[in-house]
Amino acid sequence: MTARTAIVTGGASGIGAATLEHWQRTIAVNLTGTFVSMQAVLPDMVEAGWGRIVTISSVVGVRGSARQGHYSASKGGVIGLTKAVALEYAGRGVTANTVPPFVVDTPSFRAAQEAGEAVDERFLTRAIPAGRLGQPGDIAAVISFLCSEAAGDVTGQVVSANGGAST
Image (tube, rainbow, N blue to C red; front, side, top):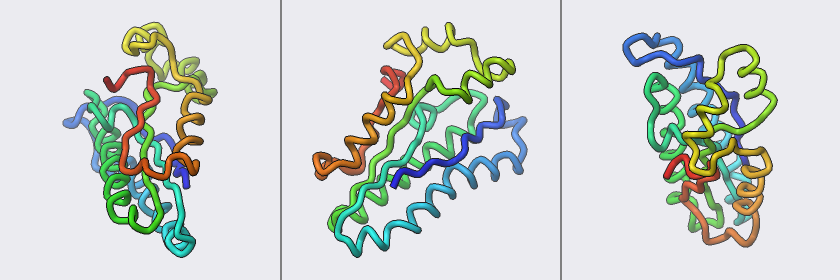
């Protein structure tokens, strides 16, 4: 199971300026959505004696981000939830891991740039030790491995595919 929830950041606002409604919406989509997805698939995985859960968290869930406390908290929660599931289900043949990308070069990122809603790419690439935005294939390769038989002993891990941004 790879949970793909909508990207909900809602822009940058400090904790003092954030509304409770915005906080609740971000938590509902990013964390509660992941929880509900896990609950939906775990019974079948346990019955089969095999399963792979890969969640998508974020670098800001690992290290935090000024003016994005709501998003950081939601993605940090995804990391904690994934680790809890890994501990609870490891003995039943189910692994659970999370991948925390940073900025990935996707059509939605490009659209946000064109709309003036994303940080300039040159600034972002300076913040990434690899010096480039992530590519969808980078993330897909990690997820593919984590879903494979070869990853049977990998569980409860935060497997970074973010050009070193979480280092």
